[in-house]
Length: 112
Length: 115
Image (spheres, each protein chain N blue to C red):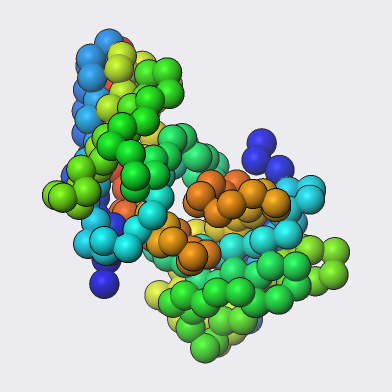
């Protein structure tokens, strides 16, 4: 039962343009939503998160939007840079729980 | 460098065998998590330890077991290996003393190949 879904396995974007990565979830009990970035041969690294009481969180070029009614979140990267090329995982955490639920990842390629 | 150390980085073994993966969390972190990433899959939560005690269990097979030692390092034991156990196994630790907001620090992973 995949509670966090990333339906786009890959995305290609031109350098300087906006990258939009999407994520859907099924469990309304999730309290925090996170994005992790993973480069080849490295472990995932935390990128940005958002609490369920907010609808937007911004950190530099990265913004995460949360639409609770649609059970959907998205990560916007503006402007996209070649160094952003990586696999991006969406993850969610239930209040009071210990473990994260991860999506299957979206491979972003930023073309110079 | 996340500060989480995993060994070995790569491991090739045969079906039916047993392996042990090792993880050292960041200095001061009491929680250790184990995740499995199979081909084209997201990270699947296996198990979590906090200061030596099991705290949460996910989709961990009975053939798999884990423990956390007094020095806080953790080991994941995989036995009676099957081809489908081939995967990347990640260890992660969580900063102590903070509310759990899901921010974990991951090691580089151990890639297990079962032939």
